[in-house]
Amino acid sequence: MQKILIILLLTLNLYSDDKVDYNATLHHSWESLKNSVKNIDTDKILKDSSDYIDSVNTQENRDKATALYNSSKEELSALGSNMSCLINKFNVKKAQKVTYEVRITTNTGITSSSTAIALSSRGKLVTAYSNIDSYKSIVVIDSDAKEYNATVGKMSLEDDLAYIYIDVKDIAFITLAKNTELGENIHQLSYDNFLLKGILSQDKPNSVMLNIEATKGASGGGVFNDKNELVAIFLYKDFLDKTSYAIKPSKFSKITQDFIYK
Image (cartoon, rainbow, N blue to C red; front, side, top):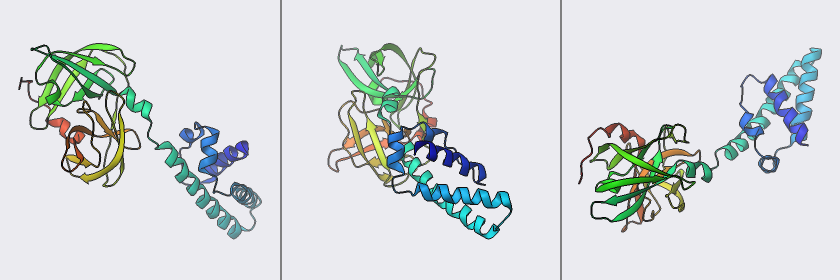
């Protein structure tokens, strides 16, 4: 059955005018593939495709060939939709790879930890300015417990955002979400691997509200969609409404001020 389905995908893709990229699909486990297509009549698709190709090759019964072709495309579209659901499933390990602990020591010797997200392979991270506004030294720790000395870059006091940098050459980094949608699934992860799932409860041009109460230390951490894209940076929670506030990447362009101690 596995071979038949793979051959079918390749055959229909060859004869279809609408090209679909199934490279990612074929990399999924066979068990996931079976679950995603359990409601699709693959025998019918295979027969329709075979009959269509035979009709085209013999130049006979073009009306029948067209009907079979359209039927196969509809079935394949349903298959593609199921595959898309699999492909867009949130991957915790990917989120962990771009999530960092920010451990600061203040001038008075107090230490605290918060969260940051990697924005580039060269070690550019973003966090909440309020996490580091009184730092004396900063150590950044990745998901493999490797430590880096960090330097502070620009900030935005108004938006409570700041850049910090670590000396690396090639690390995993986040992709920014191009759009958001009210009610879409979100996943909020803190440096200590505390994961919360919810929805976008309010969607504004530069910020979102989440129907979750993020934990201590989560400030500066990522809010991800099902595609593992960065929707927003979590800043604080509202105890009365039991919601959380996060700011969108559209505000990153405002991180242009020289750092100041608050």
